[in-house]
Image (cartoon, rainbow, N blue to C red; front, top):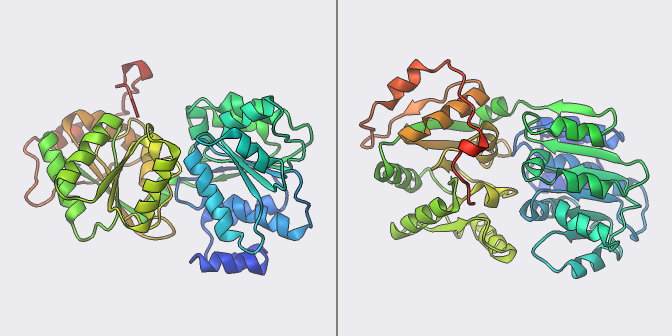
Length: 406
């Protein structure tokens, strides 16, 4: 299948081709026809599988099909973070060059009054984070009565951040029937399916196996480290390898991210930091530099990296392993995008073994352990791991997990 088979207008096809895409991803091939037909959609697919274009293109086609008056917004898109909201806006501008829809952004980090003015004057699309939208709706500053299409992106992240009630309260003000699409990386463990039942009517369900998809595009490897010094040496070796063109390094805490970034800079590595304490303007500028290739390495926490969409990230390096498998999928989905090959490197100290087991259980297979010449571990942690290879990993409750100050 090609994009030509999806019954999109020529100007949209031209924008898609100008962006370097000729073949739709699996989620695009399934979601675009369903949304064009007016169906509700529940789509489960990993980060990096093209979910944003899967709902942006049908919305743009909708505006292309029928004349519209720019008075009240017809489309509402909700995202868990402002970074993701601005990335969605970028895709609309990229693919909608011929239509030029008027977009109002309702997110934190900017004056709500200026945003309200955009949302109430010649607006086609509202892109919002749930908290800001609900506050403006409750103040009767924003009217959603003309909304005909609602898209919820990264619904699993939205629920993890406790935004579900805000979403339902804001959408309850829309009295007329609307078409809805809910996109998520996973349907497991966080109430996404219950959330979907509240919002969707007889949806077409799309399930793209995240682990299998990533296996096609991303080489995943584990390197064992004895201690922090060994871990730093491995990190430096991977980053200075000529194959590493642009790297995203993940840490679980902002204090660890600061430590790693400072150390890389002390080794004359072009590195910068992203975590949740930076304001919107700083984060956007740092993402711009990373996207432009001015910075080789970005060290980030999961909070800061949500919605981070940078082409041609060659390496995702988990300096700290995440506590959950779905977070691991989100992280490594930042590389291997648009059918390009990527590398996911996991640097594992002995205390990371339980996290590794949980990730492997989520994936349904073990990750290969590799050794880097000159950096082989002294500890024999892989033997202990192999004995318990088939065991179901023990669930660690939130109260037993280390605090995350990202």
